[in-house]
Length: 435
Ligand code: KE4
Image: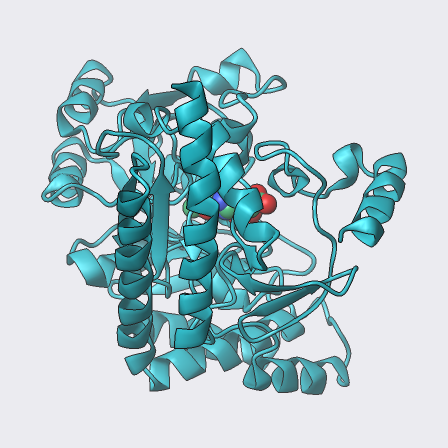
């Protein structure tokens, strides 16, 4: 079933730490051997052993139209024939910047980088340069990449591995990162008042996607906006995950709250390495070479990545019905998974925003880090492997979100529910055994 993946994993571990280039891929949170993939098309992944899977990871978000989406492939092929990089400006960078600014409310200028981490690191540096203040507030369970300032009570892989605050981050750095409870305005208000005049930025995932999927409570984002206005703090929405995923204009459009800076990744590169940060001209013109805040990158604005992003975002911009279709597909999956878990008396909660879906095996509602941490991770492991062996690939961690692609058919959703129903029997038996 997984012989080739097992061989490849053994070989990979000789040369690459943990055999992976990103920790969450190592299956440590769910056990077993990571699957090595060979190809993918539309909603389907094919592993090194030739097994086929219905994909609910989508490379952690970029594959909103499914894998090897024709317009993207064609665009990358064409761009590659003209060289893979110039280290100099190209028209494609302007076109993608223009398109993102057209699609996202409130953006006036944007800078391309090579990852979501770089986008978030740069955004807080600019906020610090713009305000002359050092501290930032982030939220427990939010993940903004592996920049030092963010590896304090972080989500995603950091949470999965129990290292929400990573070694290697200096005390000097850590002291400038304050952590608040997600969806707890009072907690943020307290920190803002206790550190009056010292906070440069509040950065958050407006829809938390790195402790499962947790939407903002009503009024939370608007409350943060008011707090930032009152205390002269830069509000940064990290939309690396939810940007272009939950709506054409991302979370700002969905909730009608405007941040001062927004970070992007994933979908804007259609699977190629791209990040970006942007916002008001007054703030963004702090960035070198216009302003004094330095930020650079050899491959920033890479022509292959720009053309891939243009093809995918261009399609989404011209076909906004995709978001309605994704909404219906994800709502259908959520409803039928709920019926399966209910039928088998499996304690569960699901949170959904558009085509981001969080599945938690616990009795309680989940609206912050503490409640998310109560999810039964062992039971999630059973769920994960039960679906895997039935040809359905979920994110290999209880602290991640599922991402649906518009390539999923009704048959795919039905097959997923059937696999979950079979697996739920195993889960129920495990729960009975535990008593
Ligand atoms: P990257 O540096 O991995 O491109 O982006 C970091 C990042 C920033 N902000 C948000 C909201 C993110 O979700 C991410 C990265 N997401 C994870 C998935 N939970 C990447 C998967 C991985 O680490 O391999």
